[in-house]
Length: 133
Image (cartoon, rainbow, N blue to C red; front, side, top):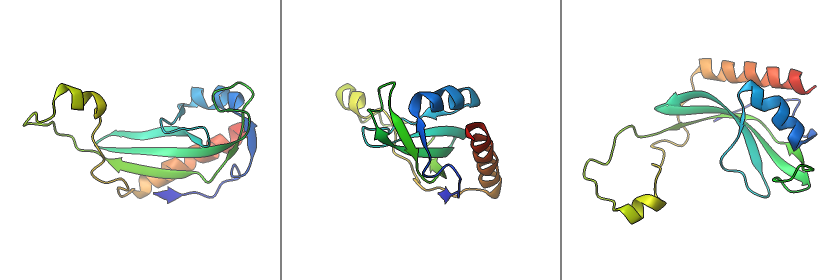
C-alpha cells in the first residue's frame, strides 16, 4: 500500500456529484462499501496483481444509498492484491460451498507496488483534485 497526501482529504461533497464527476473518468464505487464507509476505486492493473487507486470516504450526512448523502474524503492510497491464477484442479469444493465461496483469497493482500504504479496513481489523483476543485 502507498498512501498519498491530497487536498481532497477532509473535504465534503454530495455523493451524487462525485459519482457524476468520477465515473466518466473510470472510477467505480468500491465493492466493500458499508453504511459507515466506502470508496471510489480506479483500476490500474487487473491481471495477476490488482492495483487500484482508492479514494476512501465516510458519510457525514444522509445514507450512502440515498441521493442526499454527503461524504468526507479520507486519505487516498494505492493498493495491490496479488491473486492466484490457477484453478482448483482437485475440484474439492462442492456446489453448495462454491455458491458461498466464489472468489479466491489474495495470495498477497499487500503486494509490492512499482514506482511506475505509484507515479500513475499520483497523476490520476492530481487529475481528480483538478476536477473537483
